[in-house]
Length: 115
Image (cartoon, rainbow, N blue to C red; front, side, top):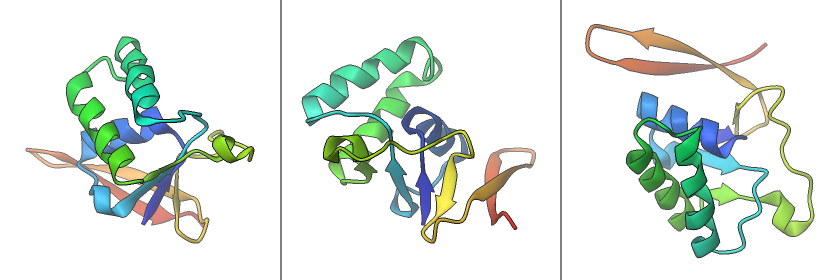
């Protein structure tokens, strides 16, 4: 399980590197009360974070929302995650680093636990 701490950044990674949605959970600093608000708000990512391939990233975001794979601590009056120290963690709270592996036809991410 990979736990992401940035909605827009993690969805960029999921799209770009083909991460499996069954292996992803996002804890984000957003505060969307319902799906309608979520849909309308993430459309603004089209102007910056998701300029390229917006429609595909938008669909990924909706799938994550619909599968209840986005947790927003601020809705429960908890602190939002700190993304300054990294974007991806494992289920035990260990920060994950990732390296890009390129071959002639694709790019993939290889995750590893930081020591």
